[in-house]
Length: 305
View (cartoon, one colour):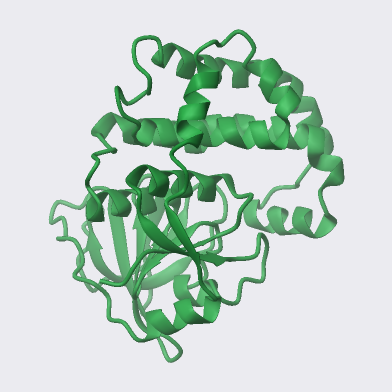
């Protein structure tokens, strides 16, 4: 098996979450820096058009969205165990509700300094205006909500050093994402919103101490060559009780249900309760298997590509 390659950029909170999980696992991985806005000429050939960061690559298998990335890391490196059932619900909360609260808090203060090119890119990604004035207005409402989310974390640490118990796990990594994102972007605001939440400072230090694993930089063209020269791995077993009645070989289009809804077309390899795997073939890279989570993603039947 080839090693883990993470296509990411430093400021991406979802990339930070994956890097933290790699630190928890103590894994070695290769880092490919992708731009924080389009075009992404060394990423989209791998993904069939998916553009959000991070993306993980293992040979000719490509994992889109941090949810399925973390699930695959847990599968290939199950020790120490870190992703029990309820932790996935915590992860989804952090990705959606907590993240959607953090965005206006940060950009309500920093929005005027954001480059116009980034604004235009994010408008295309979300399909909505990047309205700095609206985020400024929303920030006042969202700050107490952000503190409420942080207070849940603080209460979860009342009797144990981590949300996951005596050792860190997925719940901690997921919750930490929004905390560290706000802390790095607006340290004074983060300090004010966490004032009096006495367990958070030591927990943040424990999470930071996990590090990011053993990182080695890789040129983007090398990652593409690895994909080209490798065959996809054996896929997971298909779920015959799939609610959509999908069967291997069915041509489908997959897209996120929130933002970045770029439709990715391919032939279904396997549908499981928590994952979709589709196959794509190109003259440039050959056969690829692209993995998506089920929660937060939509699959519809499509015409053959």
